[in-house]
Length: 221
Length: 178
Image (tube, each protein chain N blue to C red):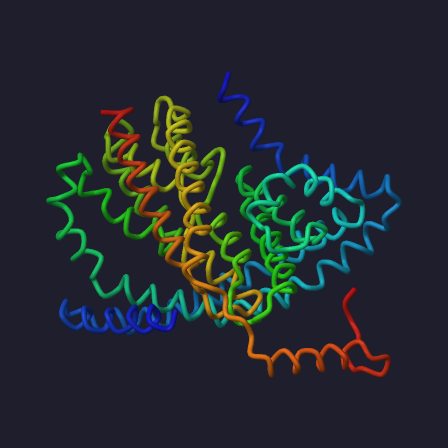
């Protein structure tokens, strides 16, 4: 990511200069920064709502039912996390929300799943195999009905907008399946970094501190 | 008929889920209001955690788009892509859809409105936009929320899958609408 970040910016400046659009490039820093905060803040409300709903779904056992239904699939895809991990149910809910086109619900639920996977992760700054698989499922953007696109097509007077659904579904399925297959292949070539033994002892002491009765942050389940 | 089923599904998907969660919660004697507010507390924290990651990626991509390089790639690719029946208008959709969802939708609306419903470019770009998710945005939000900065192979997989999606869209559209 360091290289991508570096090259995106350097290429933009170089080509901005070549194309005589350096002023636009500089201005875009401000608009981009503003936009990111706007996006993050627009997420707060809907994030809070779905995290609240998910907590109810978890307490009443609905998430666990979902988890049980897709277990045969997730056991293979996420073979590194324990079977009883709450992440499984969250992943199932995230996938269902995405498929139904409920992006507003899918994002908070997906983030919750990431948080659960992070608990099992050894190196907290580096993505685990399971996290990469979950991300691949989400970047591929599997969706049964492309609602926004259909709305645009209906808006311009497209006679038979539903004819677009089948080909879109075929394409999104191909992309989704290949994303997962690619993720499973690539994880063999990019071994997860095992944390330095010293780091592990540190973590152990941290845990001791946290779970000790007099510890300052005594939270968690 | 199919259209009606689809409309009902998209109208009822969300309300049905809410009804299911709340009814089941109450049936299992879960204090739904208290549990809801307890869970919702984290909303602010998660959104704020994402900000540094979003700023890094959205600013870099805004600069990239402003530099005019996308137009250069467009002219470079147009000759090759014309051979496989990809209209020049669709090229910006292909490049932008992994970078920015709103931009991709904007370009698509533009194509649809200027070329009209019967044009091949409208159909191809509709399929391309409808079948994808903004890889860079998803990456920033999902990994940013838990503080992951070493992505390993995640971005490469996302972008490769996007390319496969583009190729698939071209093939399917060639086969169905040409």
